[in-house]
Length: 243
Picture 1 (tube, rainbow, N blue to C red):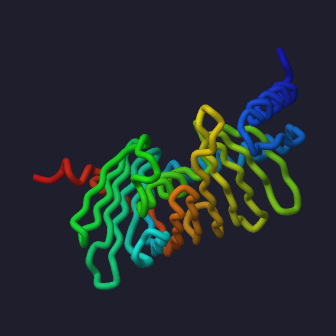
Picture 2 (picture 1 turned 135 degrees about the horizontal axis):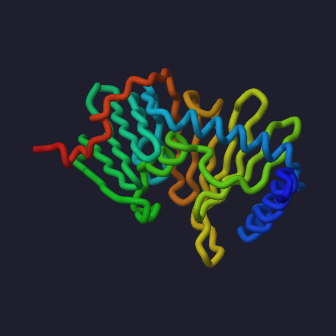
Picture 3 (picture 1 turned 90 degrees about the vertical axis):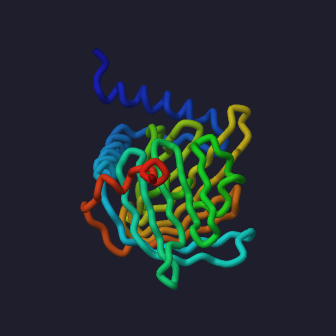
Protein backbone atom coordinates (compact mmCIF):
# COMPACT_ATOMS: atom_id res chain seq x y z
CA UNK A 1 0.00 0.00 0.00
CA UNK A 2 1.31 3.48 -0.88
CA UNK A 3 1.94 5.59 2.27
CA UNK A 4 -0.50 8.47 2.83
CA UNK A 5 2.13 11.19 2.39
CA UNK A 6 3.25 9.59 -0.87
CA UNK A 7 -0.35 9.44 -2.12
CA UNK A 8 -0.71 13.12 -1.34
CA UNK A 9 2.46 13.93 -3.24
CA UNK A 10 1.25 11.97 -6.27
CA UNK A 11 -2.13 13.70 -6.08
CA UNK A 12 -0.42 17.08 -5.88
CA UNK A 13 1.73 16.45 -8.94
CA UNK A 14 -1.30 15.24 -10.90
CA UNK A 15 -3.37 18.21 -9.78
CA UNK A 16 -0.70 20.66 -10.84
CA UNK A 17 -0.47 18.94 -14.22
CA UNK A 18 -4.21 19.38 -14.64
CA UNK A 19 -3.97 22.99 -13.52
CA UNK A 20 -1.39 23.57 -16.24
CA UNK A 21 -4.07 22.81 -18.86
CA UNK A 22 -5.75 26.14 -18.10
CA UNK A 23 -4.02 29.45 -18.83
CA UNK A 24 -2.92 31.60 -15.90
CA UNK A 25 -2.83 28.71 -13.41
CA UNK A 26 0.81 28.44 -12.43
CA UNK A 27 2.09 25.34 -10.59
CA UNK A 28 3.63 25.78 -7.15
CA UNK A 29 6.01 23.53 -5.20
CA UNK A 30 3.99 20.77 -3.55
CA UNK A 31 4.13 20.52 0.25
CA UNK A 32 1.96 17.71 1.69
CA UNK A 33 1.59 19.47 5.05
CA UNK A 34 0.43 22.73 3.48
CA UNK A 35 -1.91 20.82 1.18
CA UNK A 36 -3.49 19.01 4.16
CA UNK A 37 -3.89 22.26 6.12
CA UNK A 38 -5.50 23.95 3.11
CA UNK A 39 -7.86 21.01 2.62
CA UNK A 40 -8.83 21.23 6.30
CA UNK A 41 -9.66 24.93 5.85
CA UNK A 42 -11.82 24.11 2.84
CA UNK A 43 -13.61 21.35 4.75
CA UNK A 44 -14.35 23.74 7.62
CA UNK A 45 -15.69 26.33 5.16
CA UNK A 46 -17.82 23.69 3.44
CA UNK A 47 -19.35 22.64 6.76
CA UNK A 48 -20.13 26.27 7.62
CA UNK A 49 -21.77 27.00 4.29
CA UNK A 50 -23.71 23.72 4.28
CA UNK A 51 -25.98 25.02 7.06
CA UNK A 52 -29.21 26.92 6.24
CA UNK A 53 -28.95 30.54 7.33
CA UNK A 54 -30.54 33.95 6.94
CA UNK A 55 -28.74 37.26 6.59
CA UNK A 56 -29.89 40.84 6.83
CA UNK A 57 -28.03 42.56 4.02
CA UNK A 58 -27.42 45.90 2.33
CA UNK A 59 -26.67 45.71 -1.40
CA UNK A 60 -25.34 48.23 -3.91
CA UNK A 61 -25.31 47.48 -7.65
CA UNK A 62 -23.69 49.52 -10.40
CA UNK A 63 -22.67 49.03 -14.04
CA UNK A 64 -22.08 51.28 -17.07
CA UNK A 65 -25.34 50.18 -18.70
CA UNK A 66 -27.47 50.90 -15.61
CA UNK A 67 -29.12 54.36 -15.54
CA UNK A 68 -28.29 54.78 -11.88
CA UNK A 69 -26.73 52.98 -8.96
CA UNK A 70 -29.17 50.70 -7.12
CA UNK A 71 -29.12 50.65 -3.33
CA UNK A 72 -31.39 48.40 -1.31
CA UNK A 73 -31.51 46.39 1.88
CA UNK A 74 -33.45 43.41 3.10
CA UNK A 75 -32.92 39.72 3.79
CA UNK A 76 -31.39 36.70 2.08
CA UNK A 77 -32.12 33.09 3.00
CA UNK A 78 -29.66 30.37 1.96
CA UNK A 79 -30.51 26.67 1.79
CA UNK A 80 -27.41 24.83 0.53
CA UNK A 81 -26.45 23.42 -1.81
CA UNK A 82 -28.43 25.45 -4.33
CA UNK A 83 -31.33 27.38 -2.79
CA UNK A 84 -31.36 31.11 -2.21
CA UNK A 85 -34.10 33.71 -1.83
CA UNK A 86 -33.35 37.40 -1.51
CA UNK A 87 -35.92 40.17 -1.13
CA UNK A 88 -34.62 43.73 -0.95
CA UNK A 89 -36.49 46.96 -0.31
CA UNK A 90 -35.75 50.34 -1.85
CA UNK A 91 -35.57 53.72 -0.05
CA UNK A 92 -39.38 54.08 -0.09
CA UNK A 93 -39.97 50.67 1.47
CA UNK A 94 -41.28 49.04 -1.69
CA UNK A 95 -39.77 45.78 -2.97
CA UNK A 96 -36.80 46.70 -5.17
CA UNK A 97 -35.95 43.17 -6.23
CA UNK A 98 -36.92 39.58 -5.51
CA UNK A 99 -34.40 36.91 -6.48
CA UNK A 100 -34.97 33.15 -6.27
CA UNK A 101 -32.31 30.51 -7.02
CA UNK A 102 -32.86 26.77 -7.11
CA UNK A 103 -30.68 24.03 -8.55
CA UNK A 104 -29.05 26.33 -11.10
CA UNK A 105 -32.29 28.06 -12.12
CA UNK A 106 -33.15 31.64 -11.23
CA UNK A 107 -36.12 33.98 -11.17
CA UNK A 108 -35.48 37.70 -10.86
CA UNK A 109 -38.35 40.14 -10.33
CA UNK A 110 -38.17 43.93 -10.41
CA UNK A 111 -41.69 45.00 -9.34
CA UNK A 112 -41.21 48.69 -10.14
CA UNK A 113 -40.56 47.80 -13.78
CA UNK A 114 -43.06 44.96 -13.93
CA UNK A 115 -40.29 42.63 -15.10
CA UNK A 116 -39.73 38.97 -14.31
CA UNK A 117 -36.66 37.29 -15.78
CA UNK A 118 -35.96 33.57 -15.65
CA UNK A 119 -32.92 31.54 -16.62
CA UNK A 120 -30.50 28.80 -15.60
CA UNK A 121 -26.79 27.98 -15.62
CA UNK A 122 -26.79 28.02 -19.43
CA UNK A 123 -28.06 31.60 -19.61
CA UNK A 124 -25.20 33.69 -21.09
CA UNK A 125 -23.84 36.64 -19.05
CA UNK A 126 -25.18 39.24 -21.49
CA UNK A 127 -28.72 38.03 -20.73
CA UNK A 128 -28.14 38.61 -16.99
CA UNK A 129 -26.87 42.19 -17.12
CA UNK A 130 -27.68 43.96 -13.90
CA UNK A 131 -28.59 40.72 -12.15
CA UNK A 132 -26.21 39.63 -9.34
CA UNK A 133 -27.04 35.96 -9.98
CA UNK A 134 -23.48 34.74 -10.53
CA UNK A 135 -22.20 36.67 -7.51
CA UNK A 136 -24.86 35.30 -5.17
CA UNK A 137 -24.58 31.74 -6.44
CA UNK A 138 -20.81 31.75 -5.94
CA UNK A 139 -20.15 33.90 -2.90
CA UNK A 140 -23.22 33.37 -0.72
CA UNK A 141 -23.85 29.67 -1.35
CA UNK A 142 -20.36 28.15 -1.54
CA UNK A 143 -17.42 30.52 -2.18
CA UNK A 144 -14.71 27.88 -1.75
CA UNK A 145 -16.37 25.15 -3.79
CA UNK A 146 -14.21 23.02 -6.05
CA UNK A 147 -11.39 20.50 -6.20
CA UNK A 148 -8.19 21.67 -4.52
CA UNK A 149 -5.44 21.59 -7.13
CA UNK A 150 -2.62 23.30 -5.27
CA UNK A 151 -1.92 25.23 -2.09
CA UNK A 152 0.87 27.33 -0.65
CA UNK A 153 1.43 29.43 2.44
CA UNK A 154 3.44 32.54 3.22
CA UNK A 155 3.23 35.64 5.42
CA UNK A 156 0.26 36.99 3.43
CA UNK A 157 -1.85 33.89 4.07
CA UNK A 158 -2.89 30.59 2.52
CA UNK A 159 -3.21 30.51 -1.27
CA UNK A 160 -5.57 28.07 -3.00
CA UNK A 161 -6.14 27.03 -6.59
CA UNK A 162 -9.48 25.30 -7.05
CA UNK A 163 -11.21 23.81 -10.05
CA UNK A 164 -15.00 24.00 -10.20
CA UNK A 165 -16.18 22.58 -13.50
CA UNK A 166 -15.04 24.94 -16.26
CA UNK A 167 -13.91 27.54 -13.73
CA UNK A 168 -10.64 27.93 -11.86
CA UNK A 169 -10.53 29.89 -8.61
CA UNK A 170 -7.36 31.45 -7.25
CA UNK A 171 -8.03 32.54 -3.66
CA UNK A 172 -6.10 33.79 -0.64
CA UNK A 173 -7.23 33.74 2.98
CA UNK A 174 -5.11 36.17 5.00
CA UNK A 175 -4.16 35.57 8.65
CA UNK A 176 -6.82 38.09 9.76
CA UNK A 177 -9.50 36.24 7.76
CA UNK A 178 -9.74 38.61 4.80
CA UNK A 179 -10.40 36.88 1.48
CA UNK A 180 -9.46 37.77 -2.08
CA UNK A 181 -10.39 35.55 -5.00
CA UNK A 182 -10.44 35.48 -8.78
CA UNK A 183 -12.78 33.05 -10.53
CA UNK A 184 -11.98 32.50 -14.21
CA UNK A 185 -14.25 30.50 -16.51
CA UNK A 186 -12.81 28.92 -19.66
CA UNK A 187 -14.29 27.44 -22.81
CA UNK A 188 -13.10 24.02 -24.01
CA UNK A 189 -11.19 25.84 -26.76
CA UNK A 190 -9.10 27.65 -24.14
CA UNK A 191 -10.91 30.96 -24.61
CA UNK A 192 -11.51 32.96 -21.44
CA UNK A 193 -15.26 33.38 -20.99
CA UNK A 194 -15.43 35.44 -17.85
CA UNK A 195 -13.52 36.64 -14.81
CA UNK A 196 -15.04 37.46 -11.44
CA UNK A 197 -13.20 38.97 -8.49
CA UNK A 198 -14.09 39.39 -4.83
CA UNK A 199 -12.48 41.10 -1.88
CA UNK A 200 -14.12 40.36 1.46
CA UNK A 201 -13.50 41.01 5.12
CA UNK A 202 -14.11 37.32 5.80
CA UNK A 203 -15.85 34.19 4.59
CA UNK A 204 -19.50 34.37 5.55
CA UNK A 205 -21.20 37.34 7.18
CA UNK A 206 -19.14 40.46 6.45
CA UNK A 207 -18.51 43.01 3.71
CA UNK A 208 -17.66 41.95 0.17
CA UNK A 209 -16.97 43.78 -3.09
CA UNK A 210 -17.44 41.97 -6.38
CA UNK A 211 -16.74 42.70 -10.04
CA UNK A 212 -17.70 40.72 -13.15
CA UNK A 213 -15.58 41.39 -16.23
CA UNK A 214 -18.11 40.25 -18.86
CA UNK A 215 -20.86 42.64 -17.73
CA UNK A 216 -18.83 45.19 -15.70
CA UNK A 217 -21.32 44.63 -12.91
CA UNK A 218 -20.02 45.82 -9.54
CA UNK A 219 -21.62 44.72 -6.29
CA UNK A 220 -21.00 45.89 -2.74
CA UNK A 221 -22.75 43.77 -0.13
CA UNK A 222 -22.72 44.05 3.63
CA UNK A 223 -24.10 41.36 5.91
CA UNK A 224 -25.45 43.19 8.97
CA UNK A 225 -26.54 40.12 10.93
CA UNK A 226 -26.97 36.37 10.52
CA UNK A 227 -29.19 33.71 12.07
CA UNK A 228 -30.27 30.10 11.52
CA UNK A 229 -33.97 31.02 11.48
CA UNK A 230 -34.84 30.04 7.90
CA UNK A 231 -38.46 29.16 7.01
CA UNK A 232 -38.66 26.32 4.47
CA UNK A 233 -41.28 28.20 2.43
CA UNK A 234 -38.67 30.82 1.58
CA UNK A 235 -37.29 28.55 -1.13
CA UNK A 236 -40.60 27.74 -2.87
CA UNK A 237 -40.84 28.84 -6.49
CA UNK A 238 -42.75 32.16 -6.32
CA UNK A 239 -44.63 31.39 -9.54
CA UNK A 240 -45.46 27.81 -8.60
CA UNK A 241 -46.95 28.96 -5.29
CA UNK A 242 -49.18 31.56 -6.97
CA UNK A 243 -52.87 30.76 -7.56
